[in-house]
Each structure stands twice: as structure tokens, then as C-alpha cells.
Image (cartoon, rainbow, N blue to C red; front, side):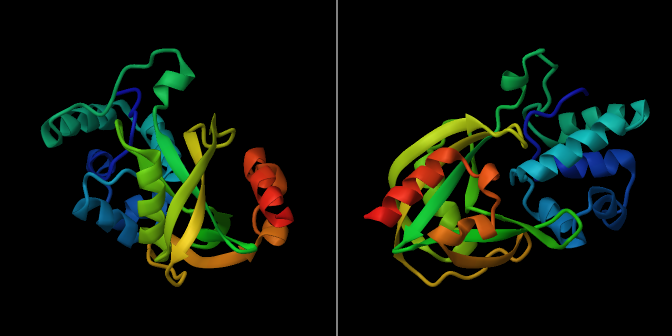
Length: 226
């Protein structure tokens, strides 16, 4: 078992069982909340966030051979299709995960969420986002996940671009969206700490400018000048 292409709740729980960790010990190993691990048991088909996927990749790589063998066997018995594939030698094809990122604007503000960090502390402000399953629509995912995370209804205006993220190595589709209705609130306290509308001109106070995809900054600059 050399590679899991996409970590789901089912695969993560299989790794926990293969390592013979309790939920609490597994959560500590990953720097996650116990309730997050419990959620994976309740929602086995959930696709985990990129940062957690990376943590699980590392944990699997560090696992002893007997645990890796148990993990492979558990996946065979718990899912109808294998979620692991042999390495291809091509980094781009090995990481097939795609995330739709919604840049939702309302007048002079942009919607952002504060992710819960690996250690349980909120450390990173980001735009609402969700994993796009094979054959799925980034537009629909962006709208759906924005509502699920923040309670805000939005509509896609246009695509800003697509790139392989330089840090997470996940493919990202960026979509500029218009606010429609809804009060921004934290609808997903397991994953997020807070939700807020940030002034476009002050966005770099929340997210370092060098970490923001340049077409986003360009789109917000154009909107500010309109």
C-alpha cells in the first residue's frame, strides 16, 4: 500500500484500525479533534481536506509493514473499489484531487472562513472551498459548499483560473461569485472557527498577498475600481 489517491472517512478509519489506535490516539497523532475522527466513522464517503490528506499520507508512509498490510486488507473488505493505486512516477497524475474555491464578493467585501488548524487552533483564513468529485461541477461545488460552510447563497460569475496549488499540490478551480442572500455564520464548527466579510482592500491582513492566486487579486482590484 504505497499511495491513497483520495483519503475518505472510510480510508482514514481503516488506517486507524490498521494501526490499532483508539479514536483519541489517532486524533492526537494527526493533530485533529476526536469529534473529527468520529465524523469520519459516521460519514465514510466524506472526502477529507487537503491538509488532512497530507497528514494521513505521512502517517501511512511511516507505518510499519504489518500495519500497511492490515490497512490494504481492510480497504479491500470495506470498500467496493480500491482507493489506493501504485505510484506512477508522475506527481500530477498521482494527486487527482480537485478543489473548487469560491471568491464571493458583496459590495466592497469578500467572504472568508477561518479553518481550524491541525492543533485545534484557528490559524488560516481561506475562501470557502469544497472537493470536486470525478465528473462533478466546480460551479455547483463552489455554490453548495459556500452555503454549507457559511449560510451564504451565491452565484458564479466567471472562472478566474485553475492551478496546481504550490503548497498543497491539489488542483484548484477558482470561481468569482456574487453574493445573493444570507447572513454569514459558521455553519461547520468542526472544520472552521469563524466566518467573516473582509474589506477587499484589507484582504492581505487575513491572507498574505503572496499566498493569494494573482487572478483573484486582479479581479478584486477591478471590482474596487468600478
